[in-house]
Length: 242
Image 1 (cartoon, rainbow, N blue to C red):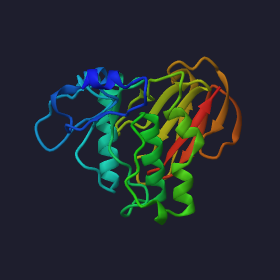
Image 2 (cartoon, helix red, strand yellow):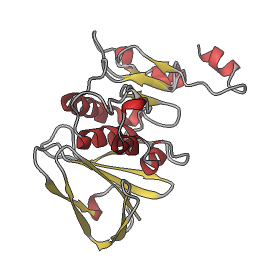
Image 3 (tube, helix red, strand yellow):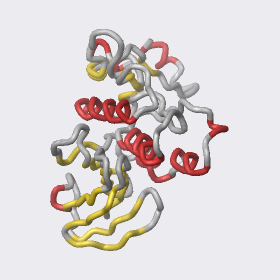
């Protein structure tokens, strides 16, 4: 398959995903063959992320998706362990997104999309687009989150920069051509104030930073040392710091 893909590379782009449900350490070799790979599945784990890049472009990270908060958090939690395998042309496939399906709240759908984009999973929608409302369409069309996911300068995903007692971790950071991005989940059952301490953010060079909201596209102001934001239950804040 590697030879076959190479033979047509100059003719047309092909996204080759490896769907072996996370078997055989695909994340360690998948990018040598394809672009993405599944990360877990219905049988024993064969670590597809260790070899998927030799065969495909992406690899699945889980069994089939479901429109539930527990699924969303579980697959994020698994991906956190394998983010070092993600780069240009090699992606952990967190499965199709459930925007508009089931009983997911708007906050949970925002987290679903933001974290799939932040961790640079392939963006695949498993829903009837004709049934999405304006709010849901705005989520999946968010230009700044999509730009981070598809940044042409930085291939690496956002990664946790500090951990606490939650599963998955709540604080992530990643680079793009625009600067340093911070994504903050609230996995709790009530709104919570989340503090971004600038000195804790990996690779952030400013101590007085401009803070920009990626959801609204608005500048929030300039802050020194830290920035505090209230994140609603099961929601995710997405910020650009420069």
